[in-house]
Length: 311
Image (cartoon, rainbow, N blue to C red; front, side, top):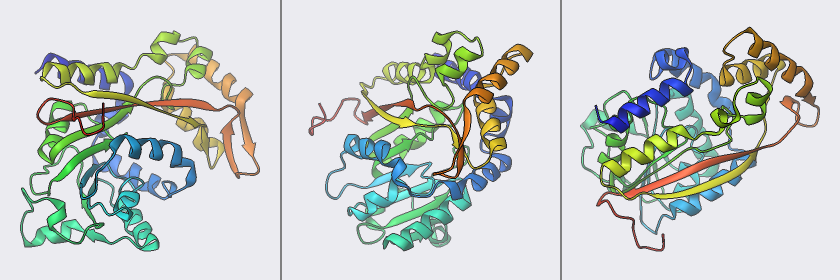
């Protein structure tokens, strides 16, 4: 295995729980995302990240998008409304149902791509050739499944969805389905699953909480493969919140994984101090605002950054 890819696998093991590693791409993981899907409604709270992402993508008129890990269509639908055809891929059927429902509400045509495959594979075809511009084609796939029957697009994107320990396979899939460039966003610094306040309260070293080790692994991998990736950052405010107190405690605990009883007790004390009920929002949340930072990484398939207004 490539050294950088092996490092990614080690990093994935470090930042993921045993349950996450065992269930990646499994029916259990799919069921978890199916349960989460209704909460991925298209709300303005997502606009800070989305607006920054769309500006960085900078799709030109007529360009198409392959959206890997599309979720409920937060990225796919606004791009389709702007006239771009989109191949939207997710392994949660309920997420794709949410995408279709949102498309209907917004007047965007969402086609069941898997039904199209009954007439034969779409290998090598650009999604622009399948229907009128502004159409979304939805396919149910995980990172672990084969994608060779899916259509291509000009740009392949993985937006906060690169959840796999086999990064070479994932990047290979993205590159195989892009004709021009690949873009992805990945954690860099403060994130919900790497909250420095919580780590510090648990007595964990601050630099362990902040080190963007997945980003380092990804950049090393791209450099060793001869690419010169573009690197930008997005920042947005975020809060810890859930519908119930139990769900919020579970989410925070799962994200920060106390190593021993002392850390667990410290985390419990932190939650008792900072967890409250927001009556206006009708939800439980922690009483502070985070500054979440994501790295935007883009590379063209010839190994060089595009000069089309992106430098």
